[in-house]
Length: 119
Image (cartoon, rainbow, N blue to C red; front, side):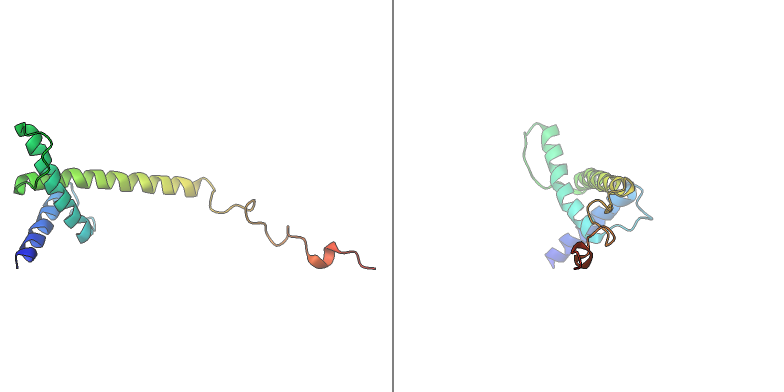
């Protein structure tokens, strides 16, 4: 039962972070939100330990630290996804979709029958 409560709380934290980032209308993946919440809790704990002067202590944080960390993780995640989609669309629009230079058409391939001289 405790595991379900932790998963539910993580999902709520991920949803809160998504709503703060303006993702009400976006179709966010539940798994993405769960991962962002768990990693965000660690990021929030790391930030709180740095602010408190404890050094680089990696620990889980509370509710507010988890939301702040999840926001940071989601921003990074979305930045990576958008840069990948820009690279992918730029790659497709530049004409690298399979040019005729790499794959010769049947017109350019010599036919076995025409290459031999008939006697």
